[in-house]
Image (cartoon, rainbow over all chains, first blue to last red; front, side, top):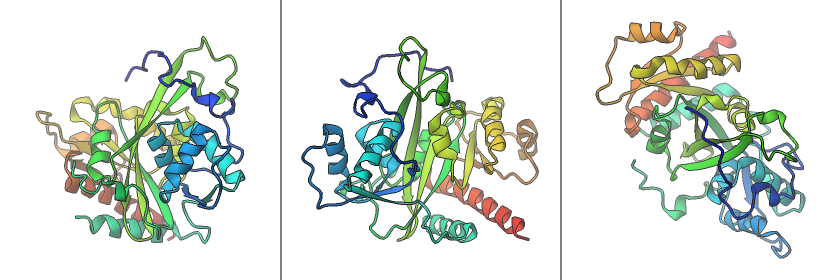
Length: 120
Length: 200
């Protein structure tokens, strides 16, 4: 595949405007499949439009970082910056993709295999 | 694509999900990655795009990037809930994204990769296979069946792709959910055998 030709940003706002120019989140703990959960009791007033949109999406239930980026049509890097801020402000919490108890990989693979076979 | 489940109610993960794992679906342009992910995903496949400078991941400060060549990298992904507690994400992306943060994000912690190949363009699979080997990510190869594409004996395809004897080679039809599920099962069985051998 040849790289796509340079093109204009599609949105009205360039992506990094919504992050105040930052390209790194305040914390480096987001995997694409880190699960994100919203806290329902936090006020949304004072949040930027993008953060409010993110919160409105996440208040419906748990999603992965990649899904949040996909639904909001934001680059993953931008999404991570917004998520970092919202975790810092107590609006969101995250769960590592693999629980800290560290299931052995063999057990995870067996569960994946069982789940796939059950779909046949 | 049998995405009958893709109603709003299924947008979110089950509350009981504890573990999320990822598998990459990689291959050259138009090899069927998006179709494959779409056949298996329980949600409408999602896409994210990242605009990068050519210098890629080494550019942390975005000041002054105007005038540099930018390129768009994209990935398509889908989701399969495999049990009450386990969800699998499939990420589809071409290999030339190697220097991007998005590629790093995809490969980090992935269980393994399924390389989709097209018998009409086997040579175009080398790049991505080399990349996976460099990163030590185990993979299986699935030849996606295209109407009218020549069918070769397995040995010839193995030779053309220069596969290791243990690397699984299968054929699949990325449009078909069952066929695509079989391809994933072959990959995961291979990953499981490797894990067992490492511990012997």
